Amino acid sequence: MTKRVIELDELKSLVGQEIAVSDYVPVTQEQINQFAETTGDHQWIHVDVERARRESPYKTTIAHGFLTLSLISSLARDAIEIRGVRLGVNYGLDRVRFPGAVPSGSKLRARVSVQAVEDIAGGIQAKFLYTVEREGEAKPCCVAEWVIRYYR
Image (cartoon, rainbow, N blue to C red; front, side, top):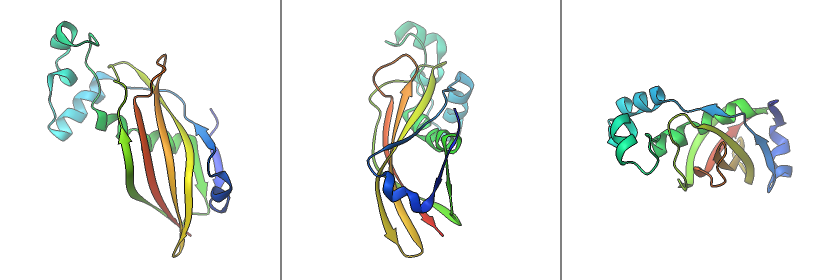
């Protein structure tokens, strides 16, 4: 996939459109374990491979929902470059859902759409819809509205 380059002033014309699809990236058990260590969330469904094999409906461990959410920034960086920006600030999330699980070893990608763009002092505020898909699965595993402020 080729990274899409978008000028800041072009974002308003892209509202309602899908602007990029990232490449697939793997989610490994090592990443899941590191995330568990960082967050202190060691629930067996994430880190106990043998128990998950026996007791989980997925027959393997699954990634934390927040791990999946945190991958959005790297998926975005690999798919889109916004030019004409002096500073970009993560302003937060308006809505996040985790409709599908991410079994260890899955590959994920993100589809990115522009939902809204408004002027703010010194720049613009943009709301993007990120739909994170698991390779081979129809249901998304994460859907998030991410608000970013871009300053000129």
